[in-house]
Length: 56
Image (cartoon, rainbow, N blue to C red; front, top):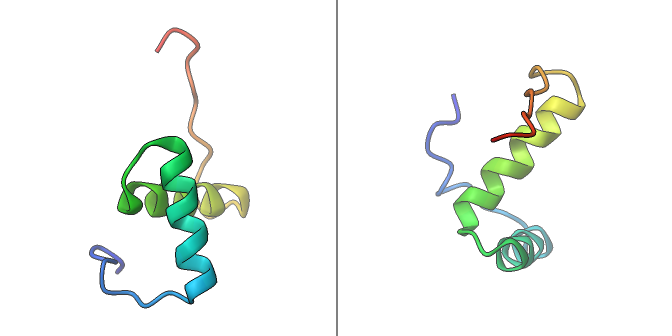
């Protein structure tokens, strides 16, 4: 299980891209990694797509 991914080595280009995304979104690097991973799993149908409510 991937509970603590802080020690997972990333290729330099991947790490740079995640850091760039985090900076653009003004969030932490771990949060950007979680978002990218979750959205990738939703896109490939390994996770159900979350329902986003307009009012929230």
